[in-house]
Every structure is written in structure tokens, then in C-alpha cells.
Length: 615
Image (cartoon, rainbow, N blue to C red; front, side):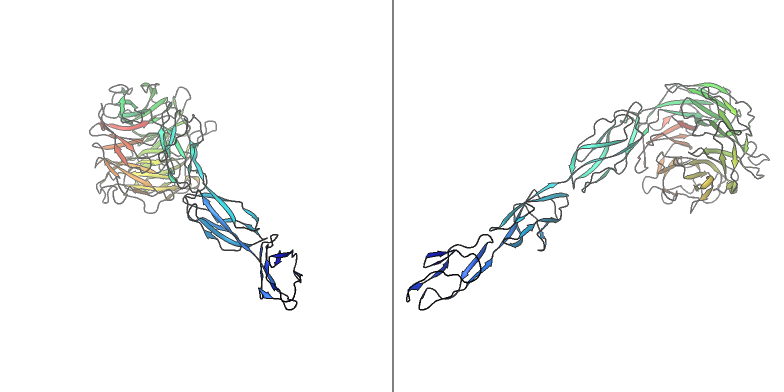
């Protein structure tokens, strides 16, 4: 609207000449804009003289400019950093605080705007949403409210091997826990969810029972960053129930219960019967034992009487002699024993006269009768551990790989052909059940001096031999290692044999036995000369064992010999053959470091604990 002298109002609807008023000559006039345009908000200004005296017709220019208005954002709930807001094509604006107005752009009246969030906040991760997001600009600044909410996430993962009841997991940072997880559960979630940017540390709050299990947490710590955490995985393994110890001096087998309370006395041994149970014949000298997978029978290799004693195992761990000397067996000096993973066959190393005489060591194989556990020697047994003419092979230890496909035997007195490899027929229904066939390529490989014990990692990737160096060759005892290839073929690890480096074997070491934890991360070797246990980490790619940087060596009793790890991987037991004790250790399942269990060593009622098996 345009007025002349405050009156004569004329509505102007478009550009061009507009007649405003007719005044007498000599009259004074003033032209003003009384109302600005609103359909597009504009500011119109009259230019030219005024007030002035009218002497002739006058044309006055009126100039109109479209107005611009600001889009102004205010943020609520912001706790993260890095938030940027934008109304294109204007550059993005960093928003760093709540309740502070941020001008995002100037938009002309009649224009439109859209608010975007090119960068959401992090630390913690948030989602910030503008309202309104888009609209039209009319005749005033546009207020936009940006509301930020923090991302939350649950923490969880998979569970493997849970068959006990009562497992509870806890985030020790937030204090949140799972419900009690049922046996057979394969996954879990800790709730309620925690805010992004918050750290978490999952621990086992309550271990399972019935049966007792020990569960460990992989990838237990981290920070929520914007997606649900699903890789904090839990592995559960049954805790050992019973420890069986063969005493060569007294010719007995003793059994012990393992304290599975997971409390201060966890891992402590308690004898089922004081004094143990004598093998069937005097002077039996049991030097090795093996337990069938069902935990119903224990077998001892009796060096003195050249036979095998079978023991039954009761529900409380008590043992009783069932019988001796399996059908068809005419041994000489049994030294080592193993049961294959299927539980269908027993393998026995027999040194014969292989201590430098004319005989060759053998591996005898027996089929185990279901239910009764009775042994019957298989067709073609016994099998030579030296396919070549090799007096002095003297096999002392044998092991079958986890796939039940291959067997390896250590020959103590011939390090140049110290480890023999065989394919193993694990069928009980074909023409040659339990037969051993030497590898066609490299059936025997060199070890260090005097190999006495052989073991395979539970994942079936690596083979290790303890070289006892009983002939006192310069350099001391070592551990040799190989990778298992196609068909069981062995490839020596780079640098084998190993002494462990710093913190490893002493120069005078006499390694006696080896054991690998269920996760295949750590290898433990006893040193009988120095009466200690050396812990090694296993490189998961190469298999190379390296002594722990700290805590690799821990003292044991005199004559540290057999070593065994319970199925859960957190109890380690060592038989000390000279002072007749059993050392008990707790194994850190993350670092592999050993610590002494209160009450260790356990004084053994016997005269030489030469072998240990754990159920």
C-alpha cells in the first residue's frame, strides 16, 4: 500500500506506473509505503524528493527488495562431539553446545530450506534429528530444534560348549548381568543396553555346575561405538573331576577328586582312597596310564610285568582292577600308552630290547570292547616304529591326532629317526581295524637328543616332542616342533628344536613330559633336572613355542615328570618322581602363567608318580 500525505491509499499489485493522488499546484506532498508486500515478504522504498511542492506531474520510483530470513537451530541433548548442521548450499556449521542458537543459512522469502546433519556426534555416538527438517520461508526467521539421543547397545556373543547349569555373565563396568543361562545355550545378551562411548568388560559372575564347568571369555573388553556388540564369545569346558596317578615304585594306581568349587580351594586334590589300588601283579611298575573318553576305565602300561592292567572307575572316582594281559599280547617292556579319540583303540609303545641291543621298538594296538573295556590285539599288531632296520628305536610315547587319522611315536635312542608317523585305521568294521601304516614319505623325522614324549595340539595342527638330552649332549634339553600337513606329513618348524629363549629351559634342562591346554595356546614342559615347569605360548600360525615373557618357569617338586591339564584348562598337575609329591597349579587361561594352588605340593602316598591322567 502506498499513501500520499498519509491518505489517498492506493494498493499496488504489480510493477509499472500507478496513479497515487491528484493535488492542486503548489500543494506539498509526501509519498510513503504504508504496508509492505507479504505474499513475498519485501521491503519497498520510495526514492526521490519529498516532502516537496507540486508544480507539475511527478513520477516517483518505488524500489522493492525481497527479504531474507535466517534458519536458526538450537540443539538439545548433545553430549558427543563432531556434530555439524547444514542448509545447503551454505557451508555446514559445527554445533558444540546445547541451547546455543546456530545460524545455518539466510533464505529469501518464498524460498525453501532443508536442514541436514552431515556429521553425527561421536564419543558417544548420537543421533541428532532436526524439527522441522524442511519448510518454506515466509516473513520471519525459522526456528529449528535439533534433538540428540545417545545410541545404546547391548553386549553379547556366542557360547560354546555349555552343558552345565547356572552360568551368569556380567559387565563389570555397568554392573549389568545376564539371566541365569540354561545348559545348551549358544548365545547371550547382557541387558539393559549401555550408551555408546561406554566401555564394557564381560566376566563370568557364576560358573556352571552339574556338571561343573569353567567358562572363559574371549574379547572381553571394548567400547560401544555405534553398533551392537556381538563378538564377546564364551567358551565353556567341563572341569576335571578325577586325577589318576600311576605309582611305579609301589605298583599302584591312585585316584583323587578335584575341588571344583571355583573358590579358594579350587583345584585341590583329595584322595578317593588312601594308598591307591595295587595293580594285579607284584613288581608291575606302571609307567604310563590312559583313560577312555567315557571315563569308565583306566589302563596302565606295566613295565615290570610287561602287561596292561585294566581298572574300572566308579562314579566317585574309585578304581578297581578288572584284569591284565590282553589277548594275544606278548610284550617286553611297555613304556607309553594312549587311547584314540573314538575310544575304540588302545595304543601301547613297547621298547623290546631297543636300548642298544638288536631289537626294534614296536607299537601294539588293541581294540577296546564296548561295555566291558576288554582289550584284544588287532590284526598285524604289533607295528614297528622304525620301517627301516633300526635297532635302538626304543619307542616311549605315542599319540593319535584329534581326527583319529594319524599316530606318532617317539623313539628315544635314535634322534636321527626320532619320530615315526603312521596313518591310523580308526574303523572297527573293515579288514584292518586299528592298523598303523608308516607314511610313504618321510615316515621318520629327526628330533633333538633323546625324545621321550610326544603330544599334539587339540586342534590337530602341530606335533611336539620333548627331547630329554639324557646323554648330556651340549646344549641341553629342547622341544622339537612340526606342522601337520596333508596326510599327516610333518614339516619341521623354523628354528626347531627350541629351548624357549629367555625364560625357557635352563642349560642343564632334562625335559620329561609335555601338555597343551585345551585352547591350544599354551604348552607346558616339565624339567626333571631343575624340578620346574616351563610355560610356552604357541604361535597360532607357525606353531613355534616361546617361553612366556614373564612367569614362564615355576618350581615343582624334585624330579618333575608327568604333566597333565584338566579339560577346562585352568588346573595343571605335575608328578614329582623323586620326592613323591604332586604339584598343583592354577593356569591363567588368558596368559598361560601358572600360580601355585594353596596346599601344593600334595604329598603322594607312594614311591614315584610316573603318570597322570585326568577325567
